[in-house]
Each structure stands twice: as C-alpha cells, then as structure tokens.
Length: 256
Ligand code: PGA
Image 1: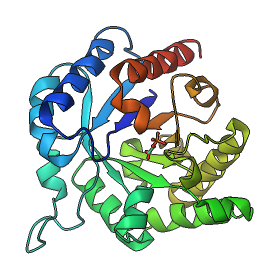
Image 2: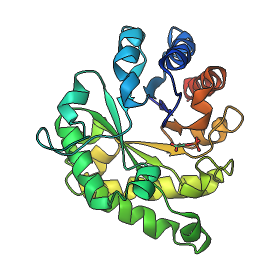
Image 3: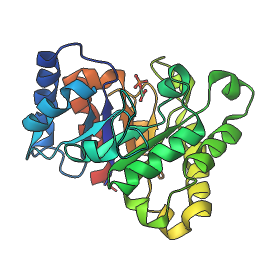
Image 4: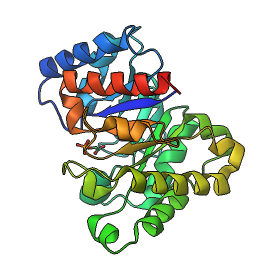
C-alpha cells in the first residue's frame, strides 16, 4: 500500500491550528482513500493530543526524530519505546537534521536500528545537496547514505522500513525533481537495499519521493513504477492541498 506522509516540521505554532489541520486530514482518511496509508508527523508537543483525535480514524501518527538509546541520561532526547506508546512511525535522518543538528550517517544508522527494534516504522531520508547534484554526484551520495544508514538493518525489518529519496535542493524550494531522474535514483536505492538485506526482503521496503510535492505534481511521482508514495512538507500544512495529494495517490494506485 502506498504511504503519504505529512512532515509538519516545526509547524503549526499552536495546538488549535494543529488539531484543525488533523481534522481536515481525517476527512479524507475516512472512506475516500482506503488504499493509501496516511501518516502525519506533528511536532513532539502535539503528539499526544493528535493521537487522541485520530484514534480509530485510520490515520497513522509519527514523530520527526528519535534517539538511539532506550532510556537514560540523555537530556532532551526521546526514546523509541516512549514513541511506540503513541506512534506507529518515526522519521530519521531528515536533511534538515543532517544540516542543522549535524546528524551523521552513523547516528542515523543507530536511530534506524533502535527504532526498528522497538517495532516502530521508520522513514529514513536520503538525498544529495545541490552542489552534489550539479556535479553529477547524486548516485554516489545517495548510495553512500543508504549503505551507511542500513548498516544494522535486518531482512526481518523490511516491512517496517521506508526510504524517502529527498534531493535536498528540492526541499522547500519549489524546484521538484524531474520524475525520470527521481525514478533512476529510486531504482538505485532498491538495488542497494537488495544487496544489503536480500532482494526478497528489499521488495517489501517502500520507497518514497519527497521535495516540493504538491497536488499539482504528485501524480508524476506516484505513477513511477518504483514509487510507493510521497513525503510531503510544506503542502501538508494546508489540509485541502494535502487531501488532494492523498486522493490523487489513491486514484493512481487504484488503477494499478
Ligand atoms: P517540502 O519538504 O515538501 O516542503 O519540500 C519535504 C520534506 O522536507 O520532507
């Protein structure tokens, strides 16, 4: 089943707006898009309230980050079991965390393994910077990130693992990737995952595209044979726009 994930980042700035946004998203999850998994990733302080609201709606809940230890003296961090109590999903290795919080491939590998071991679903993000893209190094960078990030992942984890290909130059820039280029990179990701955990298990790993996805361009990605959905940032903050993205995804997969 395709996954449409809403990464709200550090938005909206108050709980009332967050809950309004959730209500808008829930309207589509009820009935109109049964063949799509919808997951929302609010900021940490809104998780509990959002969890209460979406209970039994079919919409899944996720966090935008997690720590790799299960408990202990790690000020400011949140462990996988703490999240597991209210979430089904977590995003790991988003490029904004790689950039502003200096997250390394090694940290991302530890977070991925820890979250999977706590039975959370993990969306691990990979993607090259604009300079790398311009220098024709996208494949090299992305394959390095995938290999490093999956260092401790086992074949058994494949059904709960999602890799989001998000070219950093496409995030929040309005400059979404050419679908043919995205397809080639996603094909590379699938091949590397196969090398690491076996081709059979790799088929269960879902691969998403992310980066300036909107209602007006989502179709060209979800139509790609290897694309299992989208990770949406800015456009997920507008319920109507996000609902359109979910509906288009549902229609495309309904015809497959
Ligand atoms: P964007 O963000 O859709 O605003 O480009 C995507 C992301 O960062 O996950």
